[in-house]
Length: 372
Image 1 (cartoon, one colour):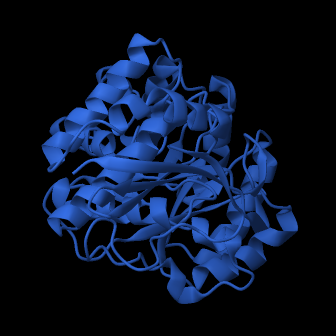
Image 2: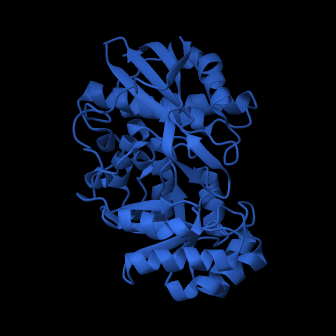
């Protein structure tokens, strides 16, 4: 089997509600979707959500890499199995390094997912079967609660409480009193037993982190995500030791090499794997297995504004990660005018490749950038 056509699209659907984080206020999707057609007529889809503040990539740089750097390999190599796909991905990464391309994880991700989709369809196997054995039938799901006016937390929490989420993450700011107000309202609605985590997106200083954690400990927080800037591993190690609170590494983790360093520095208890920032399913699976071998748990994060393609990829990965503790999958809520309480249940991981008729190119808000 060989790839005969590649189409690169930009997806930019507006959100019904904006997602405000310490990084930015997102009002629409901003992702790259890849449609790959093989000689046998099989079509596969991939997706990535580039974020300049995490990996240094944008949709423009990803489209440029895929359309100008990758075709020499993608349109000439034959592949018939998962080892063939692994070799192709390894060659693409080596090519990026040889050309000194500074950031390419998201570009690799879009190709990786499309290759596993096509390979699964060729072999008539679901994508997760190409990674490892299924270890769970049900996937407990989690969702992030963005920055909101303080007065809105109670109403939003009430709606989210009706859904099938097992855990909630509340985004934090710099003002500890405002953070306390956020958590008090969420906890009042969610009750004492529901799992609550907080996320700072690397925006706290060390002293701010200690002060905020002390101020919110009465709300029974289970973990803090990326309390400090991504390169402050010593500070994250100290946060773990001095507060006793579990630390989740997010922006600090973009590769297996990052995972090794985080583990060696004892800088976290949980690795937050996001498929796009980590280079795709194959690399994300590698990170999860590395973490498992060292007794470290994994969180599988969602990408704000992702389509059903990345969501499906996440479902397949969540089904096989043996050391998974949290699975975030609420991006679809950003596009819905009325929340449907059943939609937080993950899509099917059956069928070939990514599986399911819903895994296709979105028809609206999608612009063709390149065709090869």
